[in-house]
Image 1 (cartoon, rainbow, N blue to C red):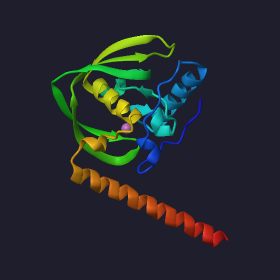
Image 2: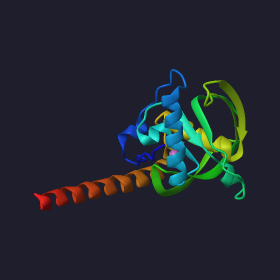
Image 3: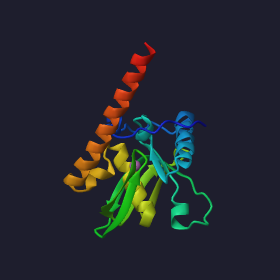
Image 4: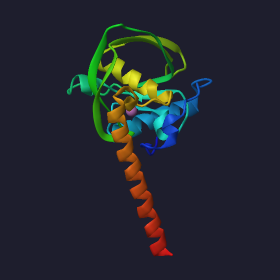
Length: 184
Ligand code: NI
């Protein structure tokens, strides 16, 4: 297992649509393990392969502690997740994202979903989810489609956060350039 660097805004790879995995083999299981280790280390409750620059339809999550702080870890892994149906009822809840550090905003999403996916052994499974699990799955599946949670908020708020991250990137680049000049 290995920690992988998490991409942050405005990295363009966050906007790529990930490809389905042909099958869940040892390489995909190793990716799942790396994603879990990286997610727990961050720490976060979900992580999509897109966020570590791997454009494959794989995601991991563990919402156990978010539901009950005394709960034991419950790592979950999903390959080729597909939303089969969503409830008409929606819920509004604050979200954050490891790729958009220190920004939180309420997002409206369907309250319940039905999902099909391949498990760690490559077996097709179906799952009905509600609450934080349904929310987290939708957030992570969005990542696999190059969609970020800020795409679900008002344009004004989204432009404000994009501006902030673009500015930070320019400052980092300027800083790096200056160091190179000093070393030369
Ligand atoms: Ni995210």
